[in-house]
Length: 276
Length: 328
Image (cartoon, rainbow over all chains, first blue to last red; front, top):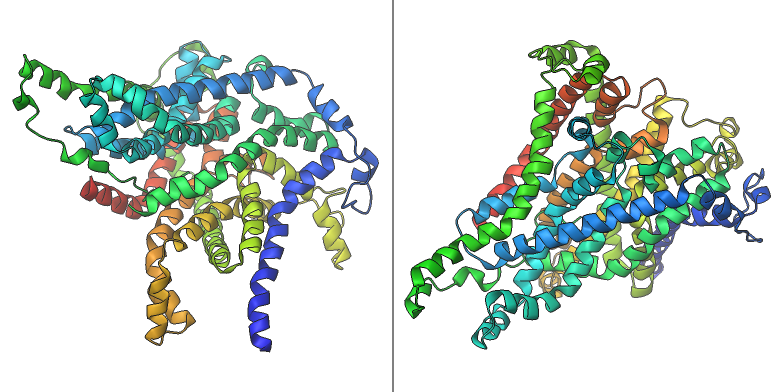
């Protein structure tokens, strides 16, 4: 009896401890961001803020170029995702629906491309971009971010296209649609959830990218939020309130996307795969 | 972000009729030729982008690694080939080997911790009741979702010398020498925090994927096992483990790749310091190449880094490729 009580208790206790371990850093980020400075630099930590202030968010958003960084990040990320979706959609349709010589090779190629070591390719990319006189521009950044998420997008969309029953497409073609029309009217609407979750993952990757923009864009006017955040603490000394406010501002869009995505990420992407 | 072994069902596309031409359009031959070209045309943009934006930089990196390219050559736009000099310098120097060893150890420790703790957390998820499972899942997803740079900044604050929570807790626990400890001041303490950060960020992916895999195991298998008199441990090794094995392989492989390249965490936490003692290979390539403006040397280090990474993952990569070839 005693043992079974223990047996029921320990998983829950462990889970509670783990929950605290995983949530605490995130909680502390938000808590610090909203705390008055006096509570941040106190000898005893204030675990639960009693007073809420937006002062730190003001400091963060009033920082030089903040809105430029926001605009740059959004531009680069959204364009990269849109371009990669368009390009990937065509390719994934061919890979999922058509039979042709070399298909296997293409799939393997994209799988390898997905593992590209971007972090160590920055020197070569720097040289290429410099020789094209395009340093401090958002164009190469968009292009390379597009490429970073393209293989994943192709491979994932391929799964979603393959999951649309072929009969639907065929019956549309029997009813007089061309293949392109059948694609646009029948497959595309059914792909909406797939396009959504794929693009969210792309968004997260591009939004977070750090090494490439670090090397390519030294001009403040062409930098993005991750770079700003990484240098924020140095610029603002030990203003942890403002630093945590800046981190929160940067993290919130991704946290929201992820909560939306979580169900689909786990059930859609992985469950579809388990069947493999 | 998906696991590599994941493979969408290939769908009925494979059983396409082969007698397309027979049903009779006016120009069956031309139509089928256009049809045969269609997949290549559809793939063309993706392939062109890959060649231009991924293939070319990779090739460029190899080319640069055979050049003497420092600040002077960079400014004057001259190309000076110097054969294998960069490689000779890198491979005969002591630094490279030290950094390589450090990188491999760093990866091994982080991957081992992530996999063991992640797998245990995944199994725990499968054991929990509904409410507690959802709670823990929310916690895991929050940690998973934290952008890397933001997470690193938060860890800098948690481990801050003054007013950092961790130092306060250690002090209260009776470890008074830690009250004003600077975590960035030594190699081991920097690695400690970076490891904690990486393991914290990586566990959710492993745990959630593994938990998802356990949900695919039919309950009847466990019933059958217990009818056969298998205890908890035996049914774990005979039922659970075989199902999870491919997932464990796949996630280990991905974690090796990701952690070996953990540039952002190491670089933004302490810049590879103190005294360049926490540089791992990608950071070393960056600091030698871009920081110290020995671009040719940096490129050579990058090439070697890629080779080492391929070596570390070759075993699994072969399995994946073979599997892919069999199934397509």
